[in-house]
Image 1 (cartoon, one colour):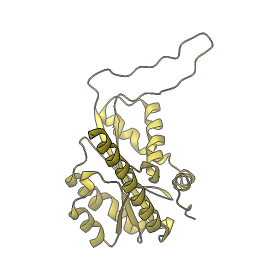
Image 2 (tube, one colour; image 1 turned 90 degrees about the vertical axis):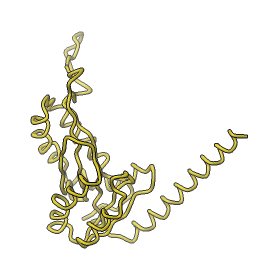
Image 3 (cartoon, helix red, strand yellow; image 1 turned 180 degrees about the vertical axis):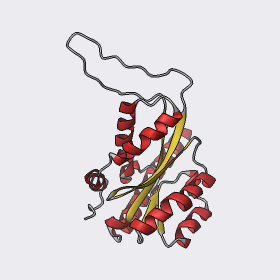
Image 4 (cartoon, one colour; image 1 turned 90 degrees about the horizontal axis):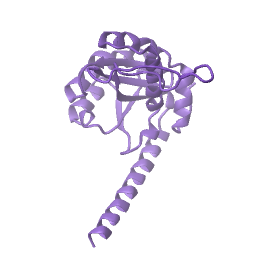
Length: 208
């Protein structure tokens, strides 16, 4: 009996998520894709190294990464159909306070300059959910829309992080300072063509 109840609950949860996705997609259809700006966080470390390499036939491709004493940075970023709008790194996990600082000091000034009609989209991370976060954005003149639960496929910044990390793996930065220095060119490697492709991949009409 307990197993059947769990199964029914799981089916109901899937149904609820499908309904959330349908509502979200209808909301987004009413918006201009050029005004969509997606926010997300990712982690990068001083242990990052290439996953693949080439070597002459019969020889091994060698690389190294520290097994211990590595350091981690959190990167908060925002992506529009033109590319990365803004980013900030910090040696801490994302909290509401940190996220609020990112919005006020980093993102909002760039949105005012480059995307004054932006609708900001983000996932349901607990640091994103307090009412004060919505207040910061709306008082600055921007709209806020949350992604449906369990829907990374609807966020174009996800593949953006993948490209960023590929560049950082190649850089093999072994100190927090070197990692932070390597981050800017890694983010700059994201082109407008990349962003448009990811927007299309996630189902949003490519901004002009």
